[in-house]
Length: 279
Image (cartoon, rainbow, N blue to C red):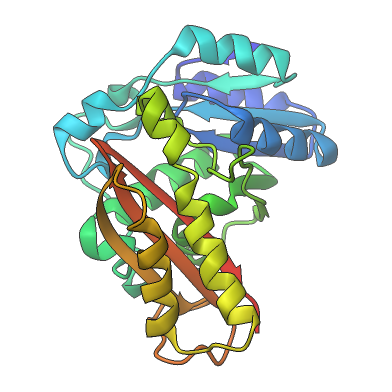
């Protein structure tokens, strides 16, 4: 495994790497969810590249950026065990040098759901991912289903900007209680982690109601909120959204495939999750 910190070195390494080349963008604090992405990439590519970069331009506040979990030594050990070929871990100034002002405008799809609460977030995500596409010239890229809106934003960017990369979305990896693996889970106390499975339980409850023939979005949202409200460890619900699976526009009646997604706080930790409602 080769670890690279400079863009020009990464370009050269990817130019000579056996193809096809699979890319997995990450912000580090790696876990089993990331491992599933590495494994999927390894199945279909001769070379696997993982980026580890905490992207400053996708954070709403400097405090949130600084508090994001980081452990490069542990991550590199993890990546070595996963059989990754190239690791790209540039500095902030390497990816965003002084004077860089260009950003990727993702349009309306990045302004809904998460985008309403985090203005500029998806612009920051799309900008760094497009830079990674340019640096690696990856043939395939892999993301997890947990970040559903991010996936749609990147899918649009790939199409709109004519990138040749093929995108794959890998199912969310969950703990025994259903909690989706997330780098932010490391910030939970033992007690909070024990109770956090209520998030998946709430989504499943709403999905079961949908599967039984209830297509009123408000009823499903209220049921999910009711279940979440049973657990006092949840300090605040930011949203329960039921939106069109393609446009992410909120639905009154679920008459086509939809995404039910939730964002909430457990203490000082913000968690998101989602399920697909297939019509």
